Length: 108
Image (cartoon, rainbow, N blue to C red; front, side, top):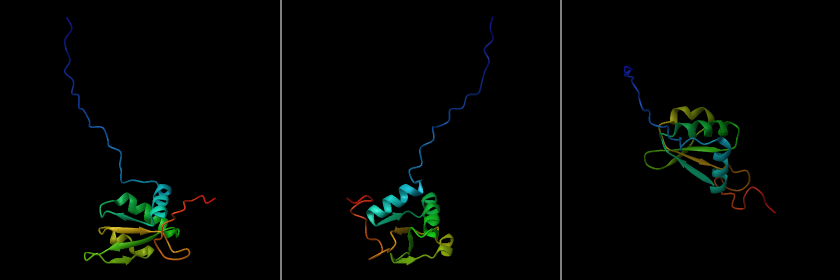
């Protein structure tokens, strides 16, 4: 007769897709369409992409202090402010910072 082997089978939970991780292209599209975007304090993936886009001149990053006041971060200051919520804004190419691109990317 056949002997049954006992095997250890471990069921792993399927990985959930990381909703907070966004490609820099989609991140910039969302910010430019809305004008600004709030980022939670624990969203490290979005903050790293935003830091890269800030160095390229595509974003303005502001850290939100405990009293709710925004403080603009220079490229060298972002690492010290990773524990604070951020606001990512469209830079003021012409006009005012954070103004949404209401017409979209393709104007007719």
